[in-house]
Length: 93
Image (cartoon, rainbow, N blue to C red; front, side):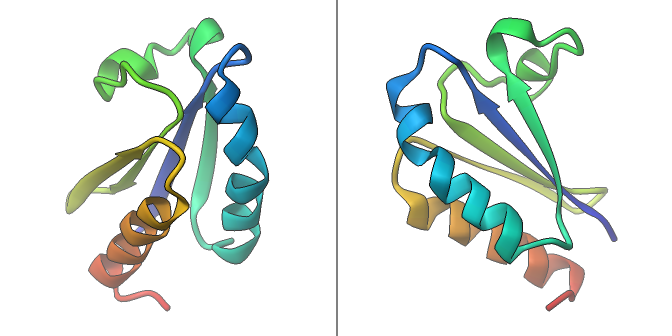
């Protein structure tokens, strides 16, 4: 099963800029996840609407046909939690 993490951000969002290094660390720590960066000011695929994202920064983690979880804000522990839940759901390590 594949895991996709959508990272919704805005270039004018101060909290987005503050957590950007932590998001980059997550990408390195969890290479088995497909990461999609979504600039909400240039969201031509309308992913923000599809995932009902109205606040940035937000990460939506989707395990195809199993679950979708989200976390918003600057509390990095929440991002780790939803990623670990997705990994457990797929049986990956």
